[in-house]
Length: 169
Image (cartoon, rainbow, N blue to C red; front, side, top):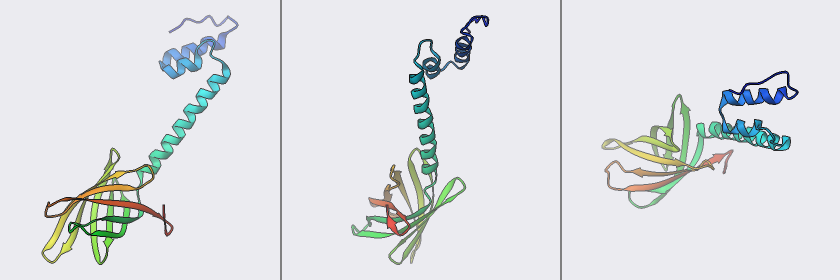
């Protein structure tokens, strides 16, 4: 840590160097370095503050995917389908309900590293069928997914587009 003589006229500059030495941060070095223009320091500090505020706002936004979505995909028979999906946050995970035509599907899942992984079930005349789907969470809130049918015969596409107050985003 730098030694400071507090009797000198530039006592404040010496104190700033002590603070930097304690924090050992490259950004602090720029902010507190001797000779760094005041306007540059202010601009850099402002950019850092904006970055921190917007990144925490995005984290909060991305943390909760609850809401209604329009669902579009390809069935295991190759036909296009549409429906509505309701996603609800429950503790650390999500509950999902799809309504496609007259069929209702239920699932549970979680988000990790930008992907939502979901196990789903549907009642059939033969019993309960189980499948999985994985969605890539896009920045605009769209979920782009791939799912596998219960017979493990193929992998199919599905896209969930958020619905905001009766209109698509």
